[in-house]
Image 1 (spheres, rainbow, N blue to C red):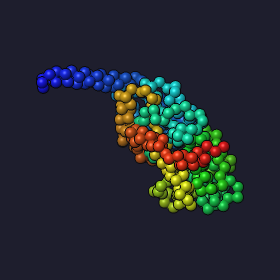
Image 2: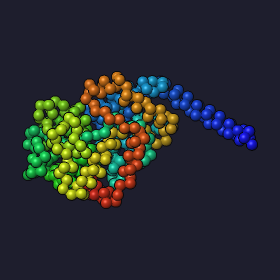
Image 3: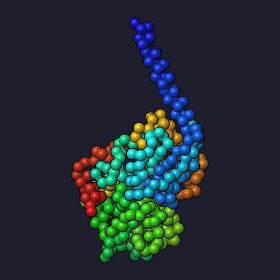
Amino acid sequence: MFTDVRRLIVPVILSFTVHVSLAYAETHDFYKGKTIRIVVGFTAGGAFDVYSRTIARYMGQHIPGNPTIIVDNMTGAGSLVAANHIYKAANPDGLSVGNFIGGLFVGQVLGRPGIEFDALKFEYLGSPMRENTVCVTTKGSGITTIENWTKAKVPVKLGATAPGATTHDSAAVLKAALDLPTQIVSGYKGAPEIRLAMQNGELDGTCTSWESIRVTSRNEIQSGDAVVVLQITPKAHPELPNVPLAIEFAKTERSRQLIQTGIHDVSLIVRPYVVPPGTPKARVQLLRKAFVGTLQDPGFLADAKKSNLDLEPISGEELENTVAKLFKVSPAVKEELSKALLAK
């Protein structure tokens, strides 16, 4: 009887082994002479762009066949155009990678118009870091502390790209949770345009990641022309020990929950790298491995340090699980977030 069982099992094992080996070989041969395109949802010069271009310089070395990797900036609607493109139009062959704002996933949960993707169906490669959101204002605005902001006689003008972006959603949640006098001015293409508007006095400030500010506004911070007045993080960033935390000013449990769910929890998934649904699993696994390898590459690490890029890598699996949890948020929290983020 044992011999009969072996006669049944061995062919199945051999068939499976051959299938996996062929898939492995096909995937490893596939990338030779190919070009991978990273579609970034924001303009050149911003933090999203800088991270992606730094990754692109090294990731090809960690993929069999050493493909060329280029960055394509596809702006619009706070990176929604890029997200929809990767989901609907990009060929699921492992040659298109999307990098857009993870806040769009919250938009899908809340039913925000214009979203044409299903976040649960993307294949996640990983993220280079967890975001530390801060609000920065100009010295010329006169808003150099959270106390100044709270007592402002006219709404503080904060620049944003579009709903779903950190610049928009973090400011909107703060306005709702802390009742801060705020006017969100959206429609900017990216960080460089917002920075220029701040320099020209068109804006008083913006809420975005500290990682972005460090990269794009280093000179203004060092000169004192721009001031970080608030951190929207669970704990203070080591480089900002004296900047207060938004959660400390929340007076009710509702306010604390809004900040926790709408900003703190989302910070883990702000900078995802994804490939389209339907991408062959073998290529997804290969790209995930290459992504991890890139973030550990000595050349990449040296380059990232030179560019002041913070690194706290998140695996593709962890991103996938975190996104799935967003869709399980309680009805009460969902209602409060809808009021804050979808209000006209």
